[in-house]
Image (cartoon, rainbow, N blue to C red; front, side):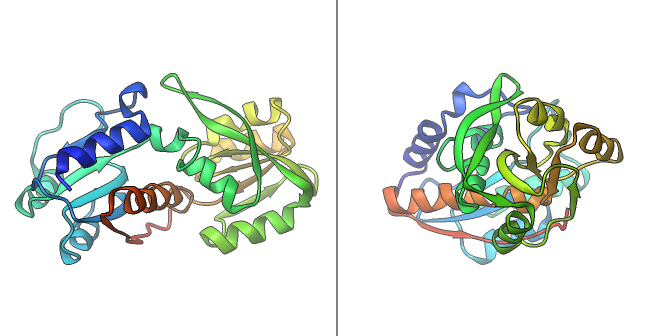
Amino acid sequence: MRRDEVVVWLDDTLGIARVPDYGPQGLQIEGREDVARVVGLVDAVGEPCVRAAVDRRADMVLVHHGLLWGAPERLVGAFGRQVRRYIQADLNLYAAHLALDAHPEVGNNAQLAARLGLTVTDWWGDARGTAICCTAVAKPPTTLDVLVADVTQHLGPPARIQPHGPREVRTVGICSGGGASFIAQAAARGCDTFLTGETSHAHFWDAEGAAINVVWAGHYASEMLGVQALGARMARELGVAFEFVDVPTGM
């Protein structure tokens, strides 16, 4: 397909223009005009990420974490090298951050709920005006041990478990990536368990004080599924080849 057609499809599917973010989202680097092969990654930055796309002869790279954030950066040092690599390889780079977290079907949090056999009932957790967290229920109720086993099956072993809530799990708050600041909101909304990516020392005590189970699944691991689901939908609807490449950070 023509690049511009693929970009319009992605923009429309994600509602990218309706979701304010921490930097420009959508097509961040314009490459070749025709797109037949798309490589999906969690991250755009890092030499292994660029190499994965080049080695697979990708025409477009679809990522959750793009290159551009906040204020403009100088194209020097490691950042400059990354940008030049994309341009020299004539790669299109498309990034979808909050729009992919919040999408009710292919988004990270919706996909996490689906993989864990949970039913999404509500969206909350404001990030730049967009609700990016979801509440999901277990029907019938499950246990914390079973939930952790399911997380391990689909994402890998969680970094840490804080079992401060009940052993029976009925209502799970989900926020992929760096969602630790939403612990208190999850508890206030009646969640007995919260699933997110990474934490800091201070948020350990937030979980203990809220009397809620928290599963720290890892930032990278909790944000793989959205790119995978979006890429699979692209392949079905647009007829392009898609491959997700796992370049884990361990964080």
